[in-house]
Image (cartoon, rainbow, N blue to C red; front, side, top):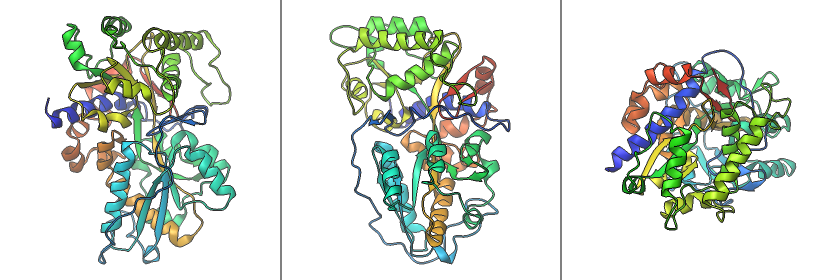
Amino acid sequence: MSYPLKIRLSLLTLVSVFVLVLAACGGSTAPTLAPSTSAPSSQPTSGSTQATTAPSSQATSAATSAPSGQATQPASANAGACPAGAANQTVTMWSPLTGPDGNTMTDLANKFTAENGMGITVMHVPQPDYIQKLNAAAAAKNLPEMTVIRAINIGEMAARNVLRPLSPDMMAVIGDVQSDFPTQFWAAGDYKGKHYTIPLDAQALVLYYNKDMFKAAGLPEPSVDKPMTKDEFEKAADTLNKNGVAGISIGTGFQGAVLFQTLIRQFGGAVSNQDATQATYNSDAGVQALQYVADLKKKYSPTVSGAGDPEVKVFQQGKAAMVIHGPWHISDMEKLDFVGYAPMPQIGSQYAVWGGGHQFALTTDDPAKQLAVACWMSWVSKNSAEWAKAGNVPIRNSVRNSDALMTIAPPVAASGIGGQSHFAHRRTRAGRCIVGPIRTCD
């Protein structure tokens, strides 16, 4: 399969899942945040343990000094130009983007640094265990200027005063862009009457499978736009579980946690009540979900464990036929000719899949730094079509409908992702939902 076609299929898989969010986001209800025991990330954590080892301290900055000239164009028609007060500022941005997607973000930071025309430098510093490091930096009064933050962590970090509300001067630069985002993703940045973040992306679990193994076994490949049934999934796992190859690779970190969160909803339960004030996972559905994940682990990959997403590495090495994990692995998976992409299978009576997202947040009180942060936020939001290269779907409506996205990721632009496609309506009428830090169901 050609490389461009692989990109089209992998992104189309993301679209097939992501339209579930948008189709359910049309109302004005604020989002429900899941408990802060697990979180989405480019390389997410399970509890306090980082799922992937990555460099934590070395910043990457543009090698080319920013040229003088005109400031970047505003991100929306009513946004202000990057103001003179932001000139020649250095912005250090932390993030949990410790995987291949972190390289994409660094590339964007370097591009903005070279092209902004204001002498603003953005330095991207990926941080494993970034919440712990943000808390420690806040205590030491040594915070960066901003951070990429998982949606699930916004409330906690705002309550601890690690994050700062976006100021009126910043919003004058960014513009009145609220209507350009799905309601629930924008509302995830609200805390006690103030707004703290600019949404960046949305994510959902992907089923990666070995096309060659499916073909050799005479099994039909999983569909891009229709989840495998329980019987189809289990038949494939059993058939392919031979000759030292695991039918599916199950790890012990982040993956197990999000599979549990997915399956408890598929079995009719929930991790918490609707307003996230009470844990509800101690239920028949919770037992059923946990037992299913435990049984998969015991049967197919009992020795796969530890940090660094070993369950993904086993699959990439050809020692497992399937693995379910986040879209941040897509950029590496595209280098392997045997990889196919499909939605999370439907194991329970109703479809659900774990989902999450990243947002930009402010962590400095310095007025000049805040203006520079606003210039960067506005630019990267406007140019977030490039972010699809990292395996994350841009959340800004105008970007998803843009010519730029059609060029960079044609399936995203062509799918009617704004919730108007036949696929989106067909899926949501069946009672599908995405669960996670921003939980939506119809």
